[in-house]
Length: 362
Image (cartoon, rainbow, N blue to C red; front, side):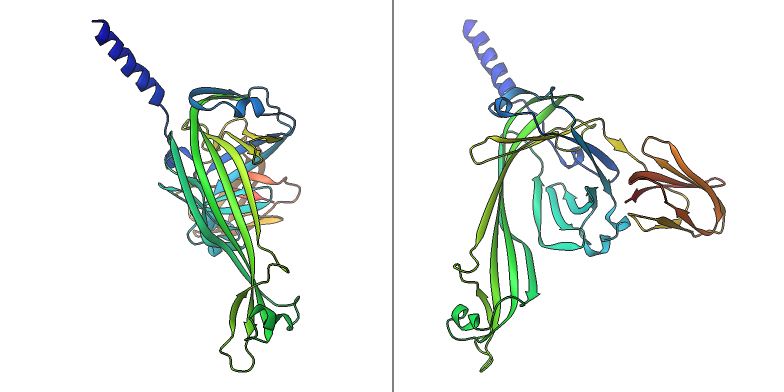
């Protein structure tokens, strides 16, 4: 009897040790999810970073909101540079920058920034996340920018090409990335806005920058090609970043709860980014057909209604406050003068038809 009880107790303990959460693609950002991220530049996380393993509790309840950034997630086709990133299905807009992602069941990849598509997608988060887990990716060539030579004399060409080329035509800057994601813990994270079941991920990102020169063989053409720049002149640079993140499958989150940059020894830099307030979502309705551009907008917003109907147009902020209200038939322009930058809800109403879309004002 005692042996049976002991076995049952051991099985129960094992079940507790391996009980955990899983974070899937359904638990992270989608179009319409808008995140408020706060920054505390004073708090130290050293005592919390030392906590790892199963069934842990990390207490960040004393964090202060010294700065808040809003990150909105929109349909890439509604943005200025969307056509440059055809594989993107989510665009994150924050701090004046557009970041284009492709989210699948296997992870979230960055495919470009503003008007710069990446040479190859780079992994931002592998999915699904579970404990324990380790995922390594790379090396991946993410950036390969080629510019006409305007800096180096042609006298370098014979040195770089070992005498077979005579002119430096172009310069290529290549950035290669490697990443390791290690889910080393799970438990509860306590933030000022609440307590959430979470997985902790330790991330190590290394990017290597190297430079090549295209040298032309002006005599036979046989020696023309790309050559690595001399290390004495343009050395290869390697930069490695380390950080901890906590991710939850709580439906009110959708983003990393906390992000803490650390050095190679695991010491934090005295800045903690964390989520604050709640997730907000603006739903889109599509019974009325209209073309609304540009998004993001600055001074004005053009609205082209395909049906020649008398339409009421409402512009509201994310809290539902009415900012502007006009009536129009067909096409019109909505002035944005004296309207603060941010995310807004634009609603068009005509008889029994309605369209609501997100708009971003810079």
